[in-house]
Amino acid sequence: MTLPLSFFERLPKTDLHVHLDGSLRLTTLLELAAEQGVELPATDPAGLKRALHLGENTGSLVEYLKVFDTTLKVMQTEEALIRVARELAEDAAAENVRYMEVRYAPMLHTRRGLRLTTVVEAVLEGLWQAKQTMGIESNVIICGIRNISPESSLEMSQLAVAYKGRGVVAFDLAGAEYDHPAKHHLPAFQLVRQNNINVTIHAGEAYGPESIHQAIHDCGAHRIGHGCRLREDGDLLHYVNDHRIALECCPSSNVQTGAVRDLASHPLKLYHDLGLRVTVNTDNRLVTDTTVSKELWITHTQMGLSLSEIKRIILNGFKAAFLPFHVKQSFLRRTAKELQRFHDDGTVESATAEPEPEAVAEAPRTEASA
Image (tube, rainbow, N blue to C red; front, side, top):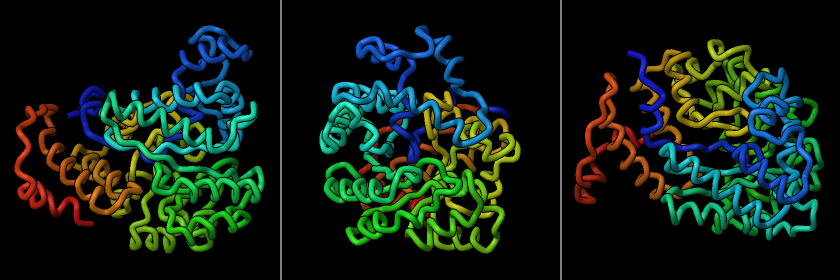
């Protein structure tokens, strides 16, 4: 039985790989541009969507990233950053995302003179506001940019260290992957690792498994962003599997950037069948024109994953989250219990009263153990 998108919208879930500057609401982009006097290629939602090729295949990561030149123009004020962060978390909560990690490079939001600390605190404020109204838990991943400079990445890593324990949970390296090796940014990774900060790195998207190898063995990545080309190196694939290094898969985005030919040939199902810790994420809600629910629905309708397989992928998201162990365990127990209400025939049982804490701790131990 093929389950509808609305069924997946009701599932509890995570989004561990979502870029702030690629996930604005289209209407917000238009409104902020009008308020700030920023010129856009179109002034209506449909026209702007066409002009920016939102949701379309661009053929390469470099082409895909060009949209960010537009979105970043309107994200240079404290008020805009608070709004965009708040709305992103609200949109995620509306489709039952329970935990989200939002990534961005603060240095890209200083064109009008904002201090880096102001940029970080504005985003944290927006996420906090959404938590108060919608209950969604969110944290931040600060990014360096491969194609800018190692010095700027080091500055971003220093920012991550300064805000560790205050909403920032990891450091990432994003941007154009081809011809910009992660090892050039080693000082940044050395600093965050010395400070016991989590590392996730975009790798194996626009370059081969050598990029993933470098991310793990040279830079100490705990998770890999995308990892589409991991299947080209079986030995490395099994290393990733054995060490439970999670993959942040973003199926629709991977097709649009040319990382994979089409959804049918995406390696996500292969990775899952082999036992890798696969997670499903949006990458960019605006640019890719997607939601987590849609991405999960795609794995069901176009990759053939069953509901039981998708439930395991959802739990992988909580297992791979950059959260303290006991917080993660609590999320896993609640989510594993809630997922039992969802059935293959599309029916959903009504929620029952929460059992006593002792009973909760024992219930889904097999699901939450690995």
